[in-house]
Figure 1 (spheres, rainbow, N blue to C red):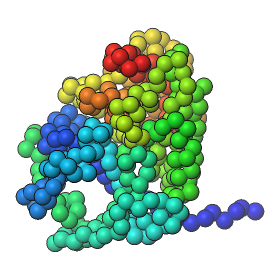
Figure 2: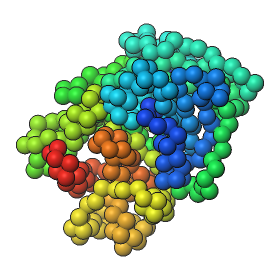
Figure 3: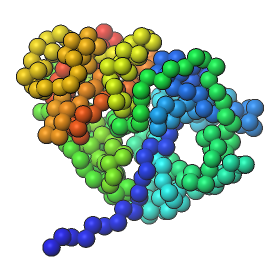
Length: 368
């Protein structure tokens, strides 16, 4: 007899947007347009009646980033940037019912960050509500079924003046959070209990370690798999792990990296490199045993090696991935570019090469 599956009390349609608090949103928006091929879509600021902040919305495929800067020296946004540097404030989740999502999660123990409110303009209405998660990060539930404007009420349409060429980025594959020593299980439990997520996969320090450093990671996912959050914590090693370095410089738990999906990683990474985006480097020796390890793949091995792309295989297929260096001066937030050819996993076979590459960067910064 099959057990009845419990109805999903928090159905999620996907990532609605990711909001960064940054020191200079105008310049950050330029970077995402010129380097990553995002298109400027919307703006809010003094000209739209926002006296304390300016926000630029950029989009490519289903990926929407909101870049927000404070116009005041003593606001929450300014304090966030002072403490963390440029960093992710909100992982916003697209829902059919924001008020219900807020009530269901707060009833299960989530701490409220913003009560449900409905914003209206000539394009319709958007209802939003927020809860706290690790560090100063929040989840904002966004209900926009009755809205046809460029982003949400309070924003006006704004077009890129740059000549733009998208680079094939499609959607957010997963977002990774770094939490403190011994906090991983607490936050996995939060996602399971408060948001109804399931534990997808566990990596321990035997899976993710080098001669010097180690970390632990667990991946949680919502029911339909649209939202996946790996949660990392440091593990004991001879030297300082990348998670410890992140926590030292971000000064709290926070979003470590955002994985962006593409259908053609060779094209996407070629374009990113052309536009000056820097990537972690794995040594040529990584490619010596790649074919025996991952078997037959459709892409040309020479091109993969030239672009320094990593490949891994699981029972369901293979994936190709590459990681940028941090996209700011603090060694905190970075991006992963990922193409899945059937694989549902996260590149476990690449962990050692990848973390050794990160350690080389840490050593250059004097933080290993």
